[in-house]
Length: 95
Image (cartoon, rainbow, N blue to C red; front, side, top):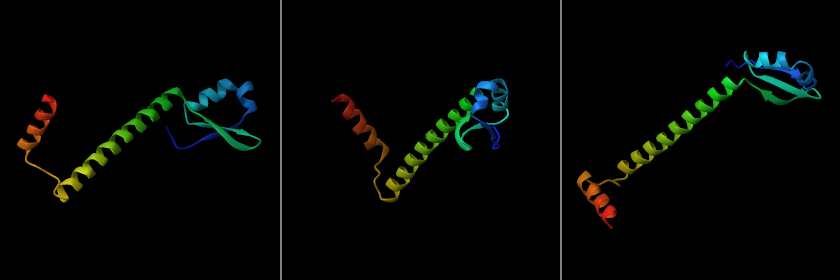
């Protein structure tokens, strides 16, 4: 998907939907009302790709937050030997 946006007036939705639909396969189309951008249309394929990219970014941000927290824990000495950690897990599961 490119960063270029086509601009069309809202009246074209009724009269030229086919053209607008075809344009969305090239780039998003901004629909104007009274000369001001109101709505943006994009192809379904671009929408799905955008949503997948957003989800991937959310997952990465969550991972980075966990890594940052882990770094803080190590830096502040909030750590314990792995055997002790596993003993705590087994104890919690057993209860």
